[in-house]
Image (cartoon, rainbow, N blue to C red; front, side, top):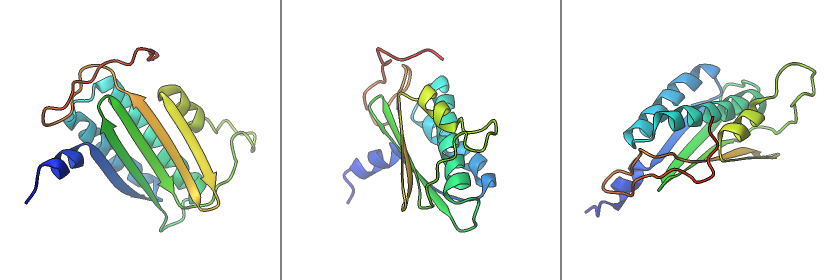
Length: 158
């Protein structure tokens, strides 16, 4: 017999396993978009979250796995009141590359830091984890009578 807790929790939790294939990024973004819309997250926040999460996933595929078949990146997002927490994790090898090759690349970490309220990336020999946090603006709501989302007092305007 269910008490309803698991159902409400399932609606506020998103998980996905993304293979190390750049072609899997668009379908994963669309699944995440649908989940965010289902929670009533305002469109500007949806777009911001998709940008940052897409960058984190692309970095995992390119840098963590070097596009190697069989690599899996996990995406986990959870909505708690007006705070969206996202974790993107790979089990590939960490390597520093930002600007090291002299190309016009390496801006993914900067983009994540600019569009999210919090962005941290921790790399170890066992893999890399990107943790992203967004305080959502007004208009969204939690399902099943949860609290209405309110704007963060110190939110930057994009």
